[in-house]
Length: 456
Ligand code: ADP
Ligand code: MG
Image 1 (tube, rainbow, N blue to C red):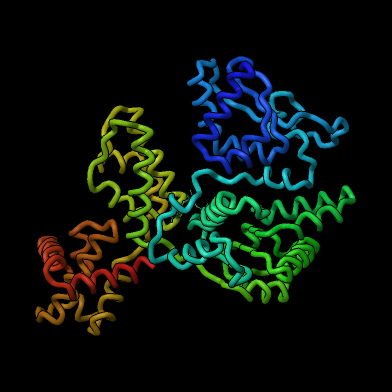
Image 2 (image 1 turned 90 degrees about the horizontal axis):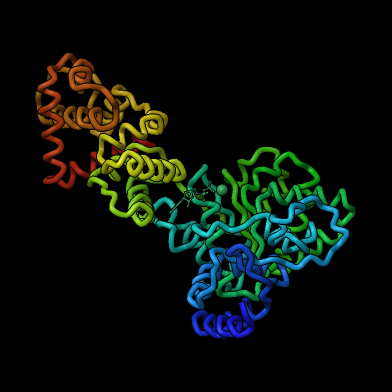
């Protein structure tokens, strides 16, 4: 690329991304060379290089193509300056990209070690009842205003969106408040850095590094339970930041009080701020997530049809873990495109048989009968007995309906559990409730409540 072309590229970029962004991110770059279709730029730090690549890489590539240059990839390299690098990272020339100059233990190294997932933004986070509080709290922190609760402690089971929310906060702050020093890392990485600092006798640097952060996010903090010296250091870092009124976000797979082998003083400090949990997903949220993710898949496999009802089926049948749900959908699209068939219910059942089996809820007929009779305040013996009064018949039909919906029992099997009734009776009952659900608000509500209780 000639100087002239580089000048034109800079000019175009300034126009498309705005003066300020340009000054912060593009101006510090220097053009290196184009080799084998790869355009190499020099960045002053790997953080900057990383950031530009993630956020403006496509833009730069696109503009270069527009200038008629033969490029297919852009690369940001920190020109090597430290000849006595001790770490063995980035020793192969091709991998030197973004790594050179990132002293172990530097802020750049920290950021490079815990890159943010581009997909984990607020835009792609679907909000529902089970996660609305966590989402609202994360949003508040992402505004970067005065610290109102410290720390924000997010907890919940695997795959419910803790990491997604933390990354979303980091993305938003990096965008709107580039002046803030925002660090995201897992508790495991925290420990790793700590041990490394001890080994290399660089504890001063380590302390200084963490104490100069404006927003610190530590993911999966349950990991440091039982690791005494790491806990100790974490506690000091934590206190130092809280004292300086710096925002901290912590995640864990359970509530602070329930993390075993975590020192009491740490538990109590973690509870000082705002503790919110991500509840297991419910059907509506799962469906919402699928609907949003299906758009991504459709864009990737244009022309692939998906039958209506398939998403509802998956939302019903796949467990509360969103990662599994997402994986199922990805697999389904890949499979359908491979075999060149539209995505039907049948294909979904075939392709995801293992996932479906694994997350099959083992709800029993007995459980359903028990819950339903409790709910309607009738005796279990009357539920399965011969009485035909509406007071008994209706709950009985609701129980039959739920058995059909929530277990894999056949109609004759269900009939047998209801005092040896015929399968046609069961079918009649199931149809009756299907029909009533659409006409009778009270029944619809009862069924919904019971389903939730049983699935919980
Ligand atoms: P955790 O850290 O709680 O184990 P993650 O944040 O890694 O869970 O989420 C697992 C996967 O599910 C990620 O791909 C994430 O994008 C997705 N996910 C979780 N919750 C949501 C949500 N509410 N909306 C969209 N995607 C979600
Ligand atoms: Mg996580």
